[in-house]
Image (cartoon, one colour):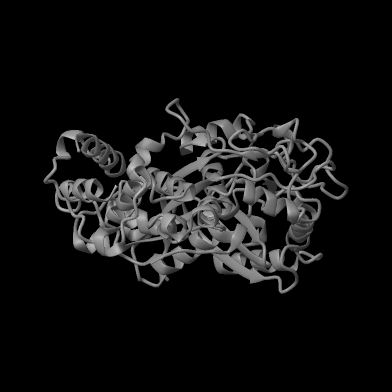
Length: 77
Length: 419
């Protein structure tokens, strides 16, 4: 779990160019971390690549926060 | 008719980042052309190009100063170059309106010949190798030509006409001419205009090589490769970069005390209706573009002091353009000076006309014309002043800049000293 969380946060920091301290588990990609709709698509692609999981579009639409991503990946990888 | 002047300049070329760096190095007869070391060229017939120097040393382009690494994922290199040159031009002009009216009366017209070729090439490989789910959501907006205009408008809040020209190697000149007309028509008071290109890529080099357009005989002496009007010329040398000007309605510029580089007084266009890549043998298209620009400018042929030629260093094109100049200007062809700055930076394709318009404006400001490098042995009939090797001080009150593109599209711009 903590390993997944760290890897997710690292990807978010790299892709959104935000400070690590801002990437808390409850942070929303769009509301708190300055992402737009294209950034969130790219983030999901980066998660898929990093964790070798497929995230279907309907699931991707529900990944709005750092915690959402960690939970999905923990359950599905 | 409303009058239009130039109040800001920005340049990113193989000679360096910034107008000052460019002008100093150009007048010192330096070349920005080198062996390509950014990708494998071992199987390409043409292995040299004018490449923008990147880094944080003086005169180098610092990418991080243009946009963050995150934002650069949304931009192919031509957008980064265009944005960098636009930032310099806007800062130079001092025009950064914060009010609605100022922003809505300021537009952007920056084009490109090819656009995001590297991004398209890489995207095609990703699609083939990994399928559609691995294509980035930034693939399309990073490659679209009008996204330079888009990014500049977003960066500065310019909400006026937002447009982009695509006319191959005449793009930069057409963008400046068309943007000036938008101001003349009272659709805007200020326009950020020019061109950007970054197609020095394996696919771009392979494509132009296949069209037999590039120099291949100087792979071991890159700075000698671009040699307009010289007997040994064998094709153009690819270049990359951006040239951007701030155009402004004369009274608008005067009212805010803006520095004025010159007035755009003439713009002429024509089509060859002849061939997709070769110019008509009699130079008819260029002749008519120059004639139209001079008519619009209302000046006499004898008033033109300097011509920044299209002069790409191709065996056919250089002499055809010179022939058209001699036919149009007659005796005065032997009194004006004409040079090709592509000898120093290569051919910037869609950015060429804008970069060369800027060099022409600087020639007028400093009363000195930039040189044609490598013009060791002019071809037969190339007997006017082509400013070989060294810059030359002379009177420069009115300048003409030519740009001709594949498809048989031609544009000529005429500027005169600040009113």
